[in-house]
Image 1 (tube, helix red, strand yellow):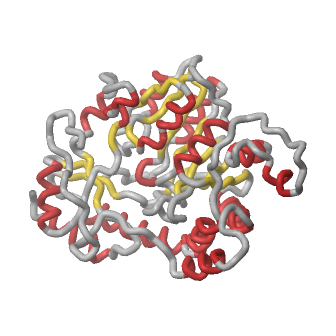
Image 2 (cartoon, rainbow, N blue to C red):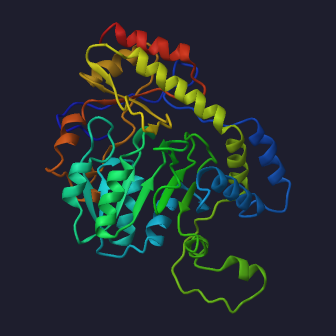
Image 3 (tube, rainbow, N blue to C red):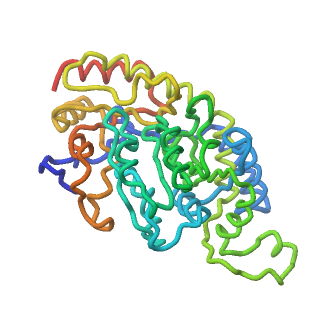
Length: 385
């Protein structure tokens, strides 16, 4: 386990069992998933088949009605595929958030791109617009942004910077399924948007991902790249003249996973409303408590997807210990990426990240949680730590 910049220990306690108290995350698996997956297991197709296409069309209609959606085996696959479709090359400089899951940035190491970390906005933990303006230049070939916790970034400002240099914007929306920005759905705003269906996301397919893209013509290339570079449709028709002209990967989704995704879409509105209700309960319950502040409140031009509830805390370890004594799990979840050796080591040009890295804390938020549970957590916090 890494130590923090101030030698303050991170949470090294083991994960709690669900019977022990209030856990941080819990998978959302609708009951319908069992029937749909059973149907797939009893069918001819368990790999990529008709359920994959059905899931893609349903997702497209809901979140990218004017674009195209392609499903893959993981959120990381979706990010890598997005970067390939954005035509990023070895040596290209990419402006990326320093605070995110490593999955956002690891594909650039596959590709030989040059990562340029951008500081956080301390009010949201999203990418900092002022620092982004300083980082982006004529060498920059793309901007990647992450909607931390489910709160959309300042997309108008990001797009304006991208337009100035004629480069694409790629949204990592792993946290942000169902979020909106100025009336537009996350998934229909930028050149590319990636979604995750990992175990504890809004919709889970066990593991999986989706890429939405504005340019529908790129979908054919995307479909080839996710299947070894092969034109799968032609191959299945027995047309063997179809050459492989680009490097591909085994990134396709299976019908088993897609069946879970379809069930998740059927219950999505209910799940999203519940998560938002919990997040609002936290916002109200944490109001006015000394030493802790709710992250991401007060925005009227965007709708939160409510994947994470994050607070800024004085004496974070003290609060984590207090919560654990009351059988409540908490954690950091994500860390600044420049702390990992693979990214070249710690940057000295990220003052906002430096200021908050020992303070942010993620509190439980998942479909198995009720508002009464949130009230219990807030009442524990109110008693001090």
